[in-house]
Length: 448
Image 1 (cartoon, helix red, strand yellow):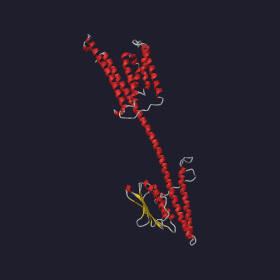
Image 2: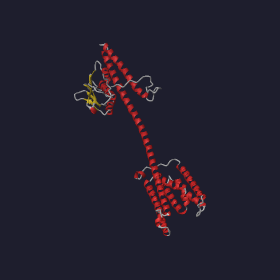
Image 3: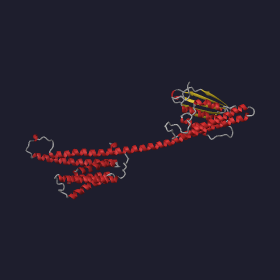
Image 4: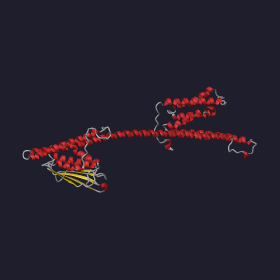
């Protein structure tokens, strides 16, 4: 019952635009209908103005229909005023009260109160009081009518056992009116309450749609920011790694250029290859930005810059990465112990971790060798893949970086709900150990 009438609900139904103009038109239509009903009574031979002149009856109809102009502004007041009008007209001028148009006015007023009243407790109490008053009045009428019928029957010469009806004629008429009013008031109250509940449901659905739209926009903005951060990390890793590799290779070539031209040539070739790979990966990352919203005419979704983007490096590319870092003065050993399926996104994060770790060793450490170890372990949902990069050098003075590389490592670990151990070792050197959980599906590493 509380939910049906909204007794504990603080939601207020908002009046529509141009509500006053609409309600004025509704009141005029009901008033014209009441005038037509009075003339129908007169045309049928009933003395509609036996007590009051015609203008007084018309005025009574106007007083009954007029409050509908403010039915949405003061719904409870309009319901009570029209109910009082119905009661007074029922006692003084039945033709006014009983016309179809005026019955519609009374019904519409009750309906509006239940459909638009902001104070749900007040309108429920007012409607209940009105219904009890009307039915009490009808009950009194029925009792009086029954008494009159009993008095008439006492003067009737016909034996009581010959009478078929349960009630007298007058009491039956009042009882019939009582049953009609039960349906009348119940329908008005129920329809009004349902209208309020329907409007409330629509308002909440609209509010939820707006919330969803707003949240979708926020999620889109967040996704754009996260994508920009991801690309920034990728660019940092690519540039830092290849620039460090180029510097190491160039330094090696300078040192052996006179004594061993062949090794110098190899180092310069590595510089050339590393620079080309850096440019290629940078174009791939920047192509990701340019490709948004740019599709081919046939709807294939390929970028329109004329070149297909290369796939992001993964676990299979770690060996090539390590090989490209090796120089005559810096050796890197790779121990690949992974023999399980590794999702592409996890493999890509492992690749970037190795890339950043080796770049940091080359730029910030005196180490001449490093070890990269790939491991896998665990069972079921606890399976994981781990990479560990170790070196035995000491920090090189004057080479402190911005910290963005290590920040990118930790963000990748956090994105995969993994764990990281990054920092100097007690026995000397530096350790980067990253463990990422594995999904139970796709394989990034090719199987024979």
